Length: 145
Image (cartoon, rainbow, N blue to C red; front, side, top):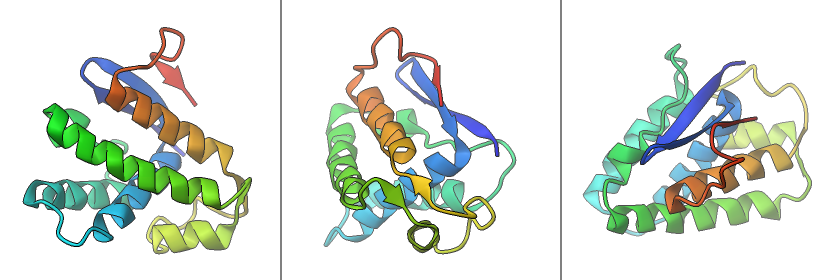
């Protein structure tokens, strides 16, 4: 399994591709639950869906500088992050293979051969949110997990 670098406004962290794929799919579910998402968010959703479900060979690239070029769009994405991380936390300490397969719509297949500790997904979500807030601490910059 590979890893990818998530960047935003000159800060970054690295995470396993499968972890980022799950996080992006949870964000997509949050977008899909919106009654009428703004047009720009529909474009972001499509881009994230491609990165979360297609093995392009260059990693999972959320393109946050493109998706959230200003604070207004960033705040909308942060609201989605709140919904998505709450869903993660509701699963409890363990994410079953069945739950992971449900999230991935079985498109990512092969990564998840068993249950996984939810902490790895929550850590990715936390870093993603901190990155959007530009609040990664010095020892978290360039983090890899």
